[in-house]
Every structure is written in C-alpha cells, then in structure tokens.
Image (cartoon, rainbow over all chains, first blue to last red; front, side, top):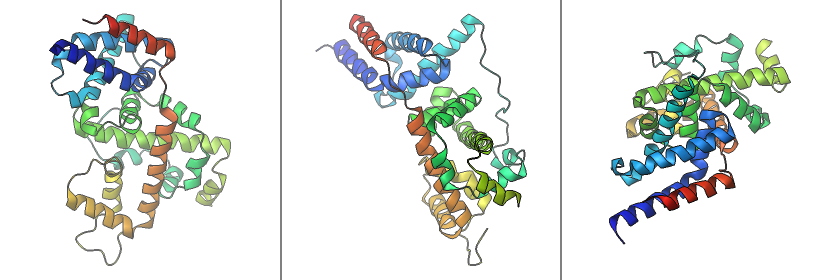
Length: 200
Length: 85
C-alpha cells in the first residue's frame, strides 16, 4: 500500500466515523437539511485537497469542523447573507456576574435554586428550538462542546478564537439558554410552583 | 454561602459558578483548583444543586441535538471519496 493509499484509507475512515457529527454541525450552521448536505459535501472535497495540512491525525475532528465552518462562512459571503447579529457580544469581561446582573430578579432567584424536575419536564424539542435561537457564537460553542464532545482547545481551533473566549461563551450561552427555557416554562405553566414560591 | 468552618480550601459561590462549566466539561486540570471546587460543592447545597441541574441540562442538550446523516448524504460522500486520488 502506497502512502497515498494509506492516507486515503485514513481519510475515508475518519469521514465515515464523523458523518453524523458533520451533518449535525452543518445543520446548526445552515438551519436547512438540504443546505447542510451540500455544505458537508463541499467541506469533504476541500478537506481532501488540504489533507497534507493535517499535522496530527488525532486532531482530525477540530481540523475537519474548522474546514466545515470556513465553507459555511464562504457560502454566506457568496450569497451576501449574513447570520443574525448577536445581541450579546463577547466582551472583554469574562465575568459571569456581568451577564447575571442584566437578568430579572425572579430569574436569578430561580437560577440560584432551580428545580431539577423542571429540566425533566422540558421537551427535547424545546431545548433544541431555544438553542437554535441563540446567537451563532454561543450556539456553535455549545454544540461543539456539549454535543460533539470537543475540548475547549479544540473548539477554539474550530472557531478561531482564544480558549478563554470559548470558556466565556459557554458560561454566557448556557445562562442565556436557561433563561430562555425558564421563560418558555413560565408561559407553559411548567414551573408555576417554583415561580409561586419565588413571587411569594 | 461560605460555611463557618471554611478554610483556605474554600472558594465563594461566585467563583464556584464561574468554574461550573469548565469543571463539568472536564476542563480544569490543576488538582488544587479541582479540590477547591469540590470542597465548595460538598459544603454548599445551593451550588451542589445548581451543578446537578447543569449536569442534567448538558445531558439533555446532547440527547436532543444529536443528528443522523441522511442515507442520501452518506451515499453521496462515499461516491465522492471513491473518486479521490
């Protein structure tokens, strides 16, 4: 077997193992099944043409996700469509406190003492639709780390940001997600007992 | 919510909250920081309860967001890779 054959075998195996993950991330980037499929196909072609730039095969996943994300950015540029602007920029301040200070008091009371049952009652599809509504920066960080199991360093490589920013986005993204779920639950009456306690 | 018997192991709730996600995501490597966080968790019911909920939410996110590549995409990628030289 030539070196090229061995590289091709490695690449095919790695793509096979990561098809679901690549499609999942592409789906979060494009929000459309058909566009996600095209994006993955384009990324696989680009990745193969750049396979010699993969220095450490153990880092295939962050390398591949980064190519996928770059393809997505190129698509946006071509179509002159920009992702929704974030209402929550990455500030210099890495303190969770600054974000919490912007939240209503009853959310903070609940946040400090949440009901475990609340998260059992919230439907998976509600969690997903609220993740979809998060600004892209937070959505992708949560997906890469909590769904695809990347480390903070690997997510930083994919998103081309410092690891400290990944840490900050996780805290902010997760807090925003919880606030959105809390508001959903309030509307659906899921958390009425908890809210009654808080408002008493 | 520091306990009365807290000593130099102890960190405050805000510091513990700051470290929540890094701890739960296995991102804290310094043994002293891990010990400080775990010590706080053993002594603060509120933070313990929050960490418990964070674990549950992480699990729910992972379960809810996992996607399956459609068969058509799988076939398309295999056909593409067959042509790679």
